[in-house]
Length: 328
View 1: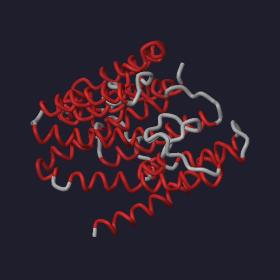
View 2: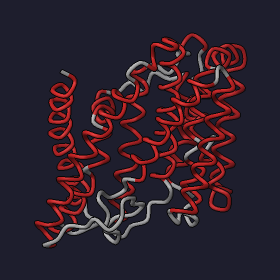
View 3: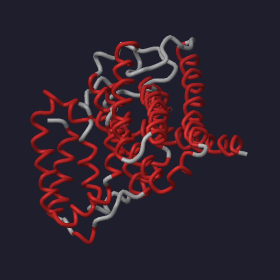
View 4: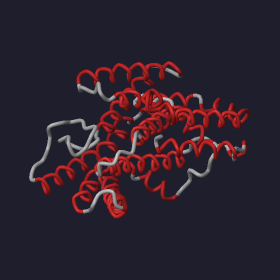
């Protein structure tokens, strides 16, 4: 059984037994940042295990699907609040914030490779793996897909309204993902294909958020029990059809988050704020500790997290300064 499912089973059971209608709250910005911090840690711990030749299951894959969900949810919630005004300067704001940490991380990553291995690698633009793939930036597929989703989101809400925009987004993501599978040889990454639709699930959840809250107020106890059964049953059949669940699993995590203030955590809040840099610069910290420390020791795991947090914090501060200069 995947470790991540043990966590979800325990969390969903706790949510069920402690359910209270007066505790139901929407997915706020603060709660979303906390979730990003949690999922960022899930990704990094999985990748640390890969570097130490320790397989930790599909934890990172599930986390990426949830990241896409939060992005889709946040974008559509912003659009619902501001309508057409939300689209003014959309690409400039979104892409600058995405490209700054992306570019600075590429420079640092390539400098690291040159310093330790005597050469830089520019053979692949997109990387699903690390160590054995010589790409501009390890695991940068997530950033590339997120950039594509920004464009698809803009086109969908600009040309279509309400539920039609979500259907259009689903259709475009399906077409583009199929194209990527063929052109970029992604056929062996079924998990990637299905995790992409977490973005559309997030948009649809945002669109129906009021109705979902009303249903939770009436049948919340029963629904949280169904969520518990979902994770319990999924834990035993996930290995056979696990990729199919990547599109809908974030929705069940969202249901759990509605009835819990436990997501409010200062540590997760901080990791959530630096989550982009935490992701983009991860392999510099992981590979550094892998070179100098014995893998699969507490020293390796602890030092990697600490060094990565330091690197990401410095990079986040620098990226914000660059963004302020560009914005002026």
